[in-house]
Amino acid sequence: MLILDDPTIQRDVRDRIINDLVNAEYAVSKVLSEIVERFQKIDDPYMKERIADVRDVGRRLMSQLLGTEREVLQNVDHPLVLVSKDLDPSDTMNLPPDMVMGFATDKGGRTSHTAIVARSLGIPAVVGLRDLAEQIQPGQTLIVDGIHAHVIVDPDPEEVLYYSQLRKKYLDTEKTIALNAEESTVTTDGFQIELSANIEFSQEAEQVRRYGGTGVGLFRTEYLKLLSPNENDEETQFQAYKHVLQVLDPDPVIIRTFDLGGDKFPGSLQGEEANPFLGWRAVRIGLDRPEIMRTQLRAILRASVFGKAKLLLPMVTDVGQVREVREHLSAVKASLGERGVSYDDGMEVGIMVETPAASMGIDLMLPEVDFVSIGTNDLTQYTLAVDRGSPYVAKLYDPYHPVVLRQIAHVVRECTKADTWVGICGQMASEPLAVPFLVGLEMDELSVVLPRIPDVKSLVRVISLEQSKTLVDKTLKAGSSGEVLELLREFVKGKYPEVLLD
Image (cartoon, rainbow, N blue to C red; front, side):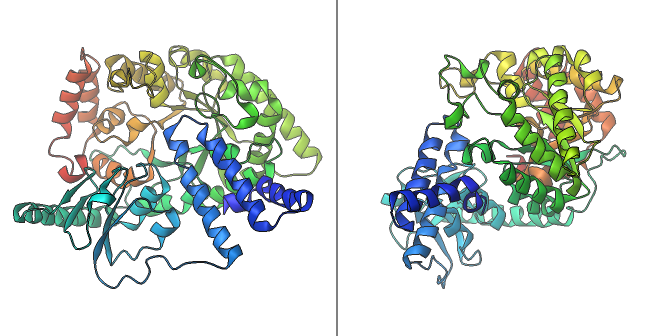
């Protein structure tokens, strides 16, 4: 719906029909093809997988315009495993989960919407298998292991028995987790921690409470800008922010300003940089292009009356950047006030800690901010000088490196001394092995990917704060990530369902 409602897309389709004298089908096809081309220029694998979403919407819209809409797998009348070169998200959404026991595709990635939809429907799936569809014949027996991401063709009786037992164990665990969705995220000795969700799309808001989360710890907004790259897209942003805030009210929603740059450039901002991750990105772009920043700030402020919005600034490395953003925020508030537009004047402003500059200089930042969120993905990358997308050095990317853990601990302790709320929204918060360490630091919040919320909650509820604090002391003295992992594994062993920990 965001794609179809995008004012830029609607305008471009109308302009082509009126100015080029083409029919609607051709205009839609050309406009969506141009969006796909923009996404293809982005190096980030996650963003590239959004191409499938745009193509899916395009195919569905074209079938409506042409009157050729097809039935998709709804008429399956017996249990089966589906094997295909690819599945559109809409095809996946229409799969009958009582008949499709699992599916495997040659294309796709674990963050594609097809995979996300499969997880939400509870259908085991393995994607990105390259050439499986050419090798499989109808009638063959398959085991689809969506936990460990592999497919077994023509399994022997022992494998069938093993996986049947594993499936029952998994389903029993899932039932327990579902029952615990309403439970608080609290340790055995009473320490309560907020458990929030990381989301990219406004429609994911409906899933947060179903999984047992309380609010959004990171709303990545780049997708809105990449889909609608013009600088006058305030209404599109406003509607997206408003929707999330209304659905989750009164729980907080932390909205991060555009983290563009690096490997995520819309066409209007595309630049040539030898090392874009150390170049023009995130808050730097916003301050250099204040019209983009102010448009987003207006949209967020307008939406802030519909719930509890909090503003998060990415890639801050200097306290002057925070002050400059606050000046823009004050100017936007004044402008909205003159127009009689309501907004939350007390909306909190926070920063992401993603660089050694921010972590080591956190004491300089704290007087200027209301809260802090630690982004472990970039913090690891910049601390270890490792491009996590490089095939040459990706093996050196290690979030359990002692220096990374020491920086996280330093930030949390400085925030605690200053009585400033601190959370963590990077991938580490979703990792079961890391959870006891993060709890032991006594941080205020963990923000994790949606499907991991029940798992993280279950783990927090079977550990104690005091034991976790002892673990932190031992971990921070470790000399290598190997020693760190050994300590974490030993701590978690026996406390967490093995089928999910694996």
